[in-house]
Length: 359
Image 1 (spheres, helix red, strand yellow):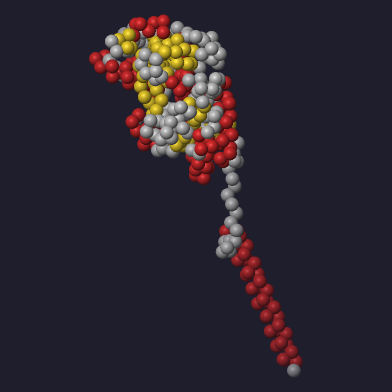
Image 2: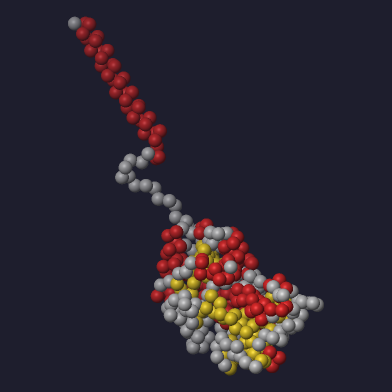
């Protein structure tokens, strides 16, 4: 009887030990797996949302006080699409904006030109087109603006030709360009000059230099389309290259047909700086070349795929196409925006390859 009692006691002790060891083993498995072995169907911990500000860089053309309201409106739209605050980076030189978007110091570059965009993408292949402003029908068929070479109205007779005006007599003159990274303020006008003066063996580098033995007696770079135009109306340059859309807020058509050789434009009364001291000055278009609308670009370093899509969806919407701070009615006195409604019906999507013509 005593033996049975002892046996029962021993068995009870062994059972308690076995159960205890099993519990310890279960605890060991749970702690070793931790959070890396989430049971099927359990909720996953979401990735932390990027709440850092989105930086938008602007060329010098849109960095002035004239476009402050436009910049603010673009910032509001970006915040609406992404939920993230926006910081604007204004510039005084094209190369600053190009370096910012290629390096990732900026996430979005608004209103670039084709050449500046291509330079940025050459530095960083991740840079890509976000959207572009369309033509008046909302397509890319006529999505163009115009590169002008102009002369002061007072000296325009020097450039008259049988069919109106010509760049035949610009050799030896004082010339103003925008920046050597500008599409319509350098690359397109120099291409037109090189094509016209085939016997001169010219290239971009030769046209960027002035002085004895050079094609131009002196060469200025205004660092913006406005700056190049001021060089002309202020009398610093004899001829100057700049584009129509960047001058639109400051000038009015005085004679002829818009964006044609021979058209005369006048600096408007009440024009803001840098034209406030040049109201009434007139100039004549002596060369006019169409240019593909420039892209708005992005660097994906600090933007998710969902945010990029949200930006594209919003900016290509009817809501933005009807935004009067971006697409303004030129018939309304004092209206300022990025593009005239009469020439652009909003933003559309396009691809990098659309700019191959400028490569």
